[in-house]
Image 1 (spheres, rainbow, N blue to C red):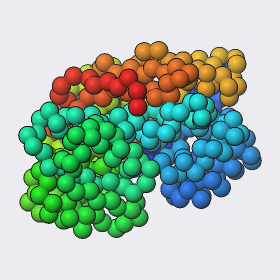
Image 2: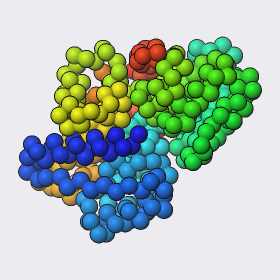
Image 3: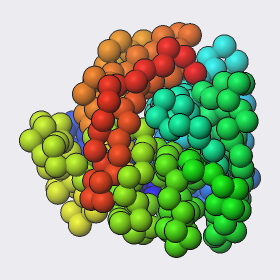
Length: 355
């Protein structure tokens, strides 16, 4: 659902510019569509850097696409900041000091699912669906690490799919036939929705864990069928727009008012809009912190100097922290279970000290 994210981010900077910009400067926000094709990403990133001479590249979508240009950004010393992917490789300041992620990394998130399964499912038999790219491998690695070597045998089946595959039906049939009673659905929204629907069609009733990247009610659960999605568990770090408990929260009201003004007709149930707003608020904070020293080096310095920062839409208790050796801004989540209408948070905020 990157269309919603891109639209939101553009609207956000329109709002910022309308209010006078940042430290008296207007933001010139340029976007190109790479079609999620890494070779096209390389071409367009070169255009942004060498022809458009951008200050930084913000929210570039996708693990394979960002991977294709990570070395280029770092050679050119151009910030590749708050990439729209949770792969753990974006938190490696020693090797790639010009690249930083934003959301909780997939490795940490998947490890928390594994630990929850061990604590709550007796003698689990686990099946895993994963996207065959770096993001999927990251999720699987974190999940296996969370299980620990002594529990690796609990995974009785895994199946991968390509981002270009029309369906994942055959993979789900294979996973069900393994006899698994736990299913880790590590897929992008379209494939995740197909998986949820196929699980229901087959009458399979595993304990179902869904990667956060596919946890939007509008983009995944509604297409899959809300009834089919009941009792699925995910890890959340943002306030879900379908959860009524946030209706009176000041930051949620702020987001809703912004949506009504800048994206009228936008689907209020689509978590892509809340995600885009929150990450844009973080970028605005860092640009503001640069003051009059608006250099690429200072941008990265400020991005690596955030202490207990709270931006709109983060769940209570979740804060942004970075340092010159910690390029993982958000490393806390809270588990949530879908009740057929919205995500219901449960348990404590879970944090990781590292990826």
